Image 1 (cartoon, rainbow, N blue to C red):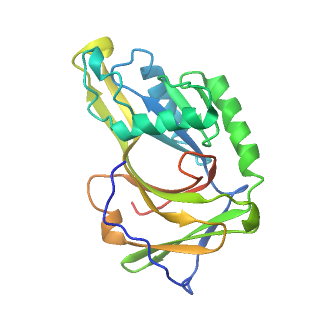
Image 2: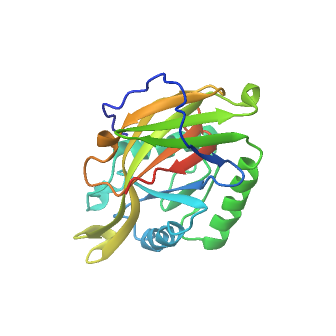
Length: 244
């Protein structure tokens, strides 16, 4: 996960209209697909993620991994940090389940990424867990600055959480030249290009100020904020920054 020059600043809440997203009502369930261009079982999961990405109740992200590169095709979108993130989830669950295509849902459970029924079951489990939280994410636009406000009503029961800033590209077609998917062109959806921690949330009101120019740089199509227990624990909340 690449780092950027984005810095966390301690700032007061701005006296402007804030978009607040209660966890049970407005926040999205985060679905992370660990996929590979060298995995013959992955294209159906990549297509399913594309359909999930259209849903407003979800934040569906592709995180291409690199551990199948030795099979004859080097994944052009893979990041070793995503492979490590997948392994960290497995360590957290204590089940050693690292495979492709794998969807990790709500930071809690996993499912075979092409199995719609299993994925939907895990989404509902994550939704029930999120409904027990009392966290809100507010996004404030003020000229050249974007401020993300995170707050919770039940601070004493909230674990230390990482606030992630995630940049992604909406749809990336890749023509695969070798390996198990040789000759196929696969479209990858909401492909994560950077995942940067911008600070920690300790259960009390906190603000994170970000320069709009930094958010809009590059060829990304979207940007989201995730609040996640520890680094790879349960997702406590997520919001999409509507900058595009």
